[in-house]
Length: 455
Picture 1 (tube, rainbow, N blue to C red):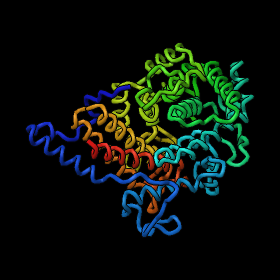
Picture 2 (tube, rainbow, N blue to C red; picture 1 turned 120 degrees about the horizontal axis):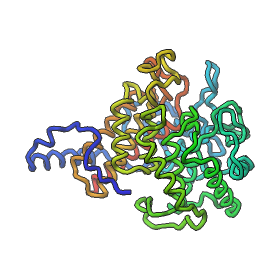
Picture 3 (cartoon, helix red, strand yellow; picture 1 turned 60 degrees about the vertical axis):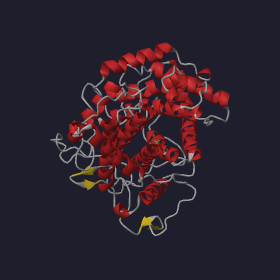
Picture 4 (tube, rainbow, N blue to C red; picture 1 turned 90 degrees about the horizontal axis):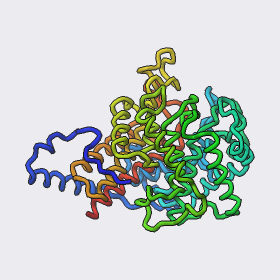
């Protein structure tokens, strides 16, 4: 998909528009040169060192005083401490001793997002190991997928017939039935990223390929049977059930990746025909697209906007330019706060006042990371496609702004909390996928600077 981006989400540089052409070119050249000098080398995840920066992984100096490369190293090492030998990541080290749910367990979604950092530091083998773990979990509970593909079961709260969103980090056994387990984006993200990795030349399903491809076929049939494009699920935030645009978009992206109609061709230097391995009917794509377009810009009937809709821009890039501008605008204008981004208006999870949640919602640093990534990706695509430079500058500045905001709410030693309530972080520090997104955000900005430097 191309990004026209004929306007930025928010105008912050009115002076550029009033400059004469010579002044504008000089100003832009100065800006791009300053960013080029900020480029850091790609990190080698197997030779991480901390000269004068850390002792046993803890910073000698406050995180904000470290160089960009040192920050990247420290943040990545905090993430790796959450990794288990089987390739999964616990959601956070918190064991529940101070109340609330234990987070030192596996959330399937969290694993798939937590391992994204490995792609951005070049550790593809570690990412593949994580996705093979998810595949093994699906194989372990394949009977639920095949049963659900054959017959529509109850998918509401506490449904035991669906794949559980959480499992034990060692045994992979289900933890509790009392949960909103029916979360379509888990399957969407899995299909999207496994297809993406295969198109990049990595074989995620090398073992027992025939059996695995049959499982993937059953997943597609399961999604069809549960009517992914029209029926409710519990979504990324495990609340509802409702029909969520983020869930529909996730599954649409996953099916589109395997359908291979050219939507994602821009991402790859060579084209790998994975559609021959898992045929996805055109009707599925068309039906999902209609459903998504009808629901947007809303996240659901109860939520006019939700920052999880940023996933429709990255990683999925499943919305058009106009839809992307509206999504980013809604998040920036309505959900951004001092210590993070609220998930949606009236969110009661860790609210400072659950009786009066509006205005007292928990603030998620993860949202800062996501906004940084989105703006940096838009700038990167603009550099590739020849978009007007002032628009690119705008997005780079917005990405840098959210990086600064993110780092300001990280702990002194470089960990990203799950959320802030009344100006204080909760116990889930670091949150694995938020820690991963910091690495993704910083590396994406680095690549923007590198692209600027090569122009």
